Image 1 (cartoon, rainbow over the protein chains, first blue to last red):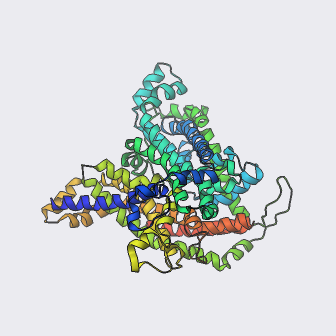
Image 2: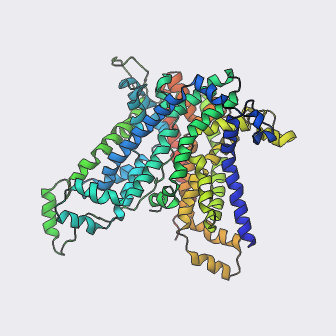
Image 3: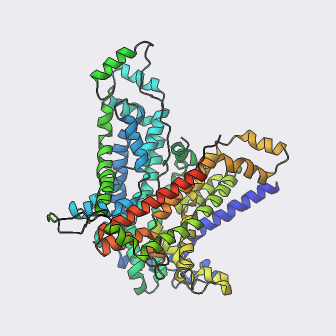
Length: 275
Length: 326
């Protein structure tokens, strides 16, 4: 019994440490004047306002930022779902020359660090292809998420092969097999892959920061970062405005993961790790 | 780009598409293979083609280009301009490595790893073990732990700036114990604070990895330790820790790669690697030298050196952490 209490105590301390900054973000975004004292962590009715949200929206266009983040993220998810599923299916179900080499490549790509790619990608995409300040330029390096390919492959592998043999005997082509037999059976994998893919571009800062100079094209993460590093100081309540922007940027991701939490468990990730 | 979940993933899978064949049909198969140079289902190549083209454009070519660039005198030009970019041997590497700022940034990553990696391993293994034991409120704790991981760095950096500012909540709570100068503007505390931030932000993901690994630890082992009179603590060190060793190797490796990729935190949290370069990361330098100061060749050389360092560290980790359990 004592050890049960100790276990819950450890978990609760952890949960507090992880959640408190989020609570403080919301409280800070609603304060008329920043109150960093300890009692300031509890909202005081006389010190509450939504002015910080209006203030930051006046400096950076929050809606435009959200729309840009949405297009960037949506493009990556679309590419991953369409082409990632195709690749995962080919790697798990079809038999073709070069299959194992391709799978080795999928694994290799995931350990190529971005710091090596950053300069050449910038030269290629921004300078040579002239894709700076465009959605295409933002999306391109992330277009197909390799981790998602591994997850798709893993789920397709778990389907019984008799299923495919039977459908082939019935004369179904590979496209039909994929679309109406395999895909409906791996729907949970699709959700897991979408969640995992979502975190990348929605939260990505470095790449869109490099290639978007025009404010109207910047995803919210980039415009909020610019606000923090250069503009915030000139507002009446800099921390309040920063917290308001942070809430707007964090809310969609947090909401998505709260709603779909059961598709983001250790089992889903473990399938890619346990081997 | 930290979501390389499956870094070492995946079994190489049986051949699920292979139809059963009667024994003795090998010669027949050989003949068929000669007739079908692309395998039994060449459609696989078509299905994988978009992915392969993507990898070619976004990974393979840029990697080769980066190495090429680091050995040539490369500079930005107007699009389409034909200029001579002579081979300069190791000049870019000499320029990069004779710059004390570069060495300092590597040293900063070293400090970062010394704090972040042990802290990440210990905290995530403890929290995952605790989470594995409870039934009630399990989902709440799991979600609470990974919320920072799924949130944009830029958003949580903003809160940390607020919390750790000179007159922030943390210093108020510490009262006379508050460091002077404050956390993010103190040259000996800036890098540790960044390491603490990254540990906090990424921990949820590593907890999930450990949770998956814990499912593979045999329950009987705990019982046999209990029979020998071992308590929870002994069970933890005698069974859990060795049982999740492969996961530990993966966690150490991913944490190292993340550490070598630091950019957003020093850029925003310590206002561009301050104070006075005390928290500059190599990637921040690559950005400053390559794009702000327009020396992409030197920046590419720093990138190559950094990768070599990471590879060496990864091999050492494999040697000491990743030994196959018998």
